[in-house]
Amino acid sequence: MAITYKRGDSFLHSLDARTKLIMFFALTFISLLFLDPLVIGSLFFGLYALAANAVGRKTIAQSSKPLIVIFTVFSLYNLYWLRPEGAIHLFYLFPWWNFFPITVEGLIRSMALFFRFFIVVLAIHTVLYTTASADLVLGLTKRESSRQLKNILIYVAIVTALLFSTINLSWGEKLQNISSNAAVALGISLVASLAVAAGSYWLLSKGLPPEIGLTISLGFSTVGILTEQTQKIMDAQKARGYEMEYKNPLLRMKAFASSLIPIFFATIERAENIAIAILTRAFDFDIRNRTYRRTLSFQRNDYVMLAILLFLLFAGLGINYLGLGRITEVIIRSLFFN
Image: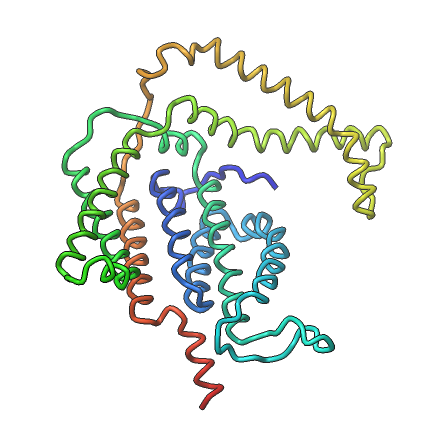
């Protein structure tokens, strides 16, 4: 199923395209902080509720169902490797060979990995479903040359605080190895965080070149068109009496091969037409100084979402620092040994 923009008036639809891109990267990072199914599962269901409210449960289910089997198999594969020292052994998956031991910790972490995969996929699906391709590209490309000093300072301050907290809460022991003096270690982490924040703003403020923005826009808009075009060609083959829906997957692949040539030529023809249309509109004339008909701006809902994401990031770092990032394992181990 092609993942295309769906109009709506939900909370996610009202967000700026840049906010939703930040949301995707932030949720991906937050999901990497945890390996506990209760914590990461709560994050998944919260994101699912937002996505379902925006585009509907049926749409989310149609795009996610094909991935359930893939992520389940991958989680089971990791079940073999996720065996920490001192893990509670339950049984062997193949008892006659004493092979593939199943442990409590392995089951818990495999469930967390399953949710982690879906958070990343659901986050990007949500961005694509609720953001028009033109807005998404506009959020990635350069829009204006003048920027307010206040906005620059706010961005640098927030990113510096986030990086400084991440370094000290996650890699505090490594900082002590660099310098035994606590004040010096804090100063090093602060300077490094400030440098990375300022550098990241400089890179992000440049934006992508207009050519890359146009390429991304065409890619998003073409996926749905190519899917419809492929379906039309296959329907035409069926109307001519050509059998394509075999139960045997090998025969189905062989039958589908007959549609590849017309699909290929139709795609090439469409690409040439798009290239001619772009050139006739003088897209390549003075492209570095081009202007934009509209600009993006943050609204109240954007600041609310950014505040929520910051809270989740700091909460995740704090939970890991306090040793509560694997609370499910702690609870189950206490039940086994008490």
